[in-house]
Length: 114
Length: 114
Image 1 (cartoon, chains in turn blue, yellow):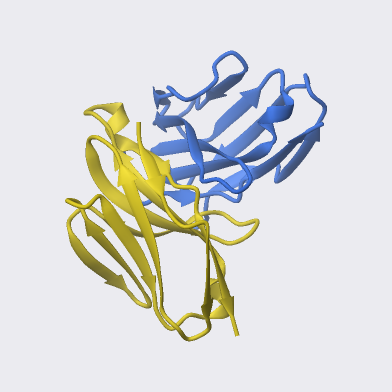
Image 2 (image 1 turned 90 degrees about the vertical axis):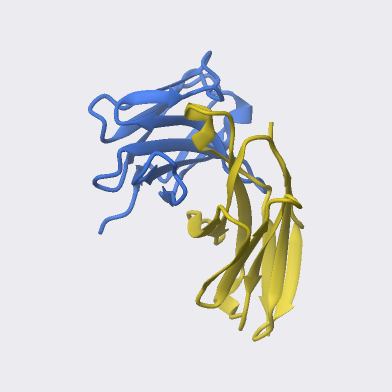
């Protein structure tokens, strides 16, 4: 069984530039999560999808962050414009059930904003 | 909101047993999860406790006391490959979308030495 796929693995951009991350969850997993992980910290939830619906985006900084999951499968997270403080690892996860007691994480995208 | 406390670092000898504690403060508690993350890698699910008591999975065991808002991860017969960060995470919140939110602690970096 293929795991959660993310791309790119690394991204370096200058501040004020836009950036996008892509995630393909495990087949059959209807629940998808985007997390941000700062160095030395645990993952922090940005947004959770049930199929194509964003059911929890309370922690997504909506002034610069956006996400979509148009067909309820793969998802894109965008930052525009990026700020220095956005440097982090962006993790995508999926779960078979909405409870998310067992979440499967992708390898993440390490973003560096210069 | 939720808060979790776990030691930042633990060092143990190969073959020994180590316990990583986690205390939490939250409302609407549903359960406690543990994840392992190697440097540069993705978090990997280890266990989930919703009820009081000990759950054993191979060399790893996880314990929960809901009345004490406390849990721990027990690793036996430590191996060098167990060197990683270990995160406790609470599933908590009010009914609805928030009840499925997972909040992670800052992680405990375990170093296994020969």
